[in-house]
Each structure stands twice: as C-alpha cells, then as structure tokens.
Image 1 (tube, one colour):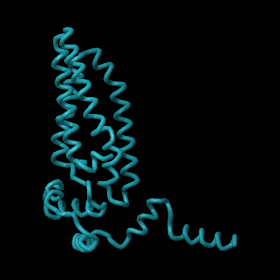
Image 2: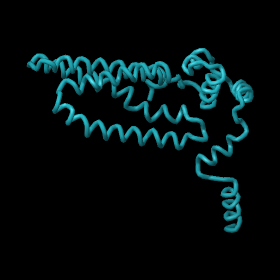
Image 3: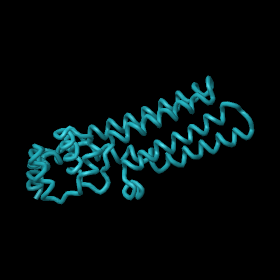
Image 4: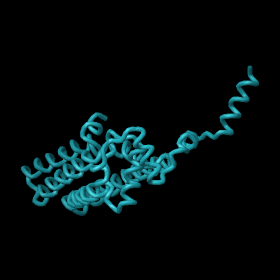
Length: 206
C-alpha cells in the first residue's frame, strides 16, 4: 500500500478518522429533516465516508498490528487484531439496520462521535512505524516506558536508527537482542529439535 508508506500509518489513521467523521456529520445533519435536497447531501456524506475508508481504515488494520507487536507476541497479536476486526464488522452489519430503523440520523451521529473519539485516541497512542525496522518500534515503546513519555512523542523525536544503533539502544534498554533467531523459529512453529530431526531424516533418505 503506497499511501501507508508515503504518508505514514499514523497520519493515515488520523486522516481516516477525521474524514469519516466529517462524512457522517454531513449525513446525519442532512437526515434530521428529510427532503429531496437533504437526501442528496446525505449521499454526499456517505460517499465521502467510503472514500476515506477505502485508503485508510480499510487496509491499515491489516498492516499496523503486526508492526507494533514485539516478535514474541506478533502472531498472537495479529490473530487477535484480525478477530477483533471481523467481530466489529459483524457487529456493525447486524447493529446498523436496527439502529437506523429507530433513528435514521442518530446512527450516523453515533458513528461520527465514534470516529472523533478514534481521532483523539489515535493522536495520543498511535506511533509512526513507516520507514522503521521492527526492532526500532520495540525501542520506541521501551524508551517511552523508561522516560515516562508518550510513545508518539518518542517516535517523532527519535531519528531512524542503523543496525549498530539498534543493537546499542536495545542493550541499554534491556531488550533481548540475542534471541531473535529462536523467536523467529517460534514464529514459524519450529524449534531447534525440529530442525535437527529434519536434518537426520534428510540424511537417512540419502
């Protein structure tokens, strides 16, 4: 996704929340008094929501969670985020028609407020991961914890690190830098004993 790499994940989240929220505001405002002209305005709001959703909140939940999870929890974190994503989609599909039947404009006001809350939450808690190594993201959160700062501030202030700087700061912050190979094997569902067994089987076949 070119936009996520060019604009950054954090910025796209904020743009998405703001754009979707404004689209819902337009829709709910136009539906308070139902007229033909207002219906056209409501349609504009819906199309505005779809436009912002398509390049922000639609793809980002598949990209961002694996990047902010440390290696040892990346699989579980990605699985949890995927389950949450689909559960929320299911809830929206089941809930929206019932809500719209009770209050045609109230449902859009609810979603507008939800997006504006997401905008505030994203501003304070989402860090920028674009252009960084995964180990740098671990360092950002570790520095935020040690220094008592917001993680997004640390990310904004911290320049991109090279390999040696990543190793140095990881050691200073007490991050595990020597167990990446084992963690990668665990990520793939392998172990050293599994690897040895595979080698023995290959030798037996020869």
